Length: 80
Image (cartoon, rainbow, N blue to C red; front, side, top):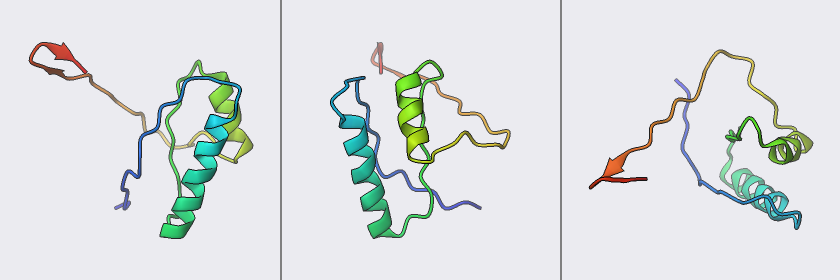
């Protein structure tokens, strides 16, 4: 079984000022300090700028058959 612990969830809007790059560098730095051996990210299929950024750091599409399934939950009638 794979040992997996979420470190953080970060959502950045597309801005050409380098926030995504800074966030990834900080994430990788922290992961190295903690001995993390792999990093997984999620990116929208239509988010070409983020895909390009991740590719520039060596992140690549997985070659297995797993899919990510998501459901939005409602609390007291409010969708989150």
